[in-house]
Image 1 (tube, rainbow, N blue to C red):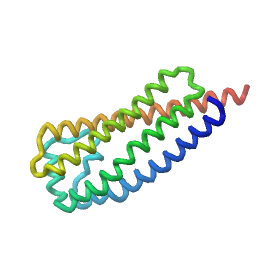
Image 2 (image 1 turned 90 degrees about the horizontal axis):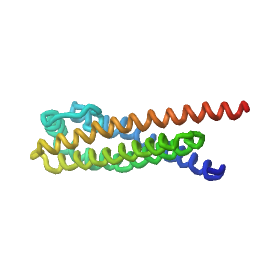
Image 3 (image 1 turned 135 degrees about the vertical axis):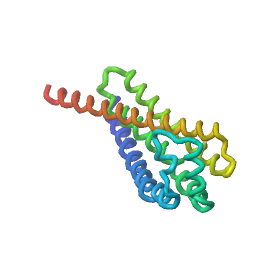
Image 4 (image 1 turned 30 degrees about the horizontal axis):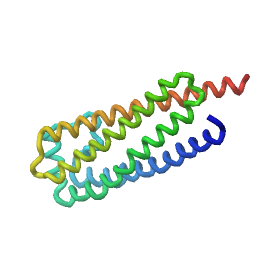
Length: 181
């Protein structure tokens, strides 16, 4: 990769990262905080170990009509943008820092993890929306499928971020070795 391509990828990583971080901060401090304040329960998005039908029904009931509408119109609207920004940030960062990584398999694996985390985030969002639209009739299989998507999203996101940090660490190490040579 030449310097111009490297600079472009770096700019994409930084730009998408700033947008993604802004959306995340807005979700954590505003929409998800509001959902938790209204319901007295942790929102679906913030349950990395999942939830069952009773927990889902308790949250949906506690939200009330206005809270469920808010979840759809505010939280899920923001969460349509966030997974794409996070994935773009992770992929661009992995590619940017991965220039000095001799093992391309690591780069491809990191990209796959980032894409997988976004896909499961979107499946989670679709499941949450479907539960809200169908309330008070929420099927047990839908809750378990949505909860599984939440768990997989959380796991893949964590792994993708850790791998990105590892690639960044290797980049810093190799850059330091090259600068001494």
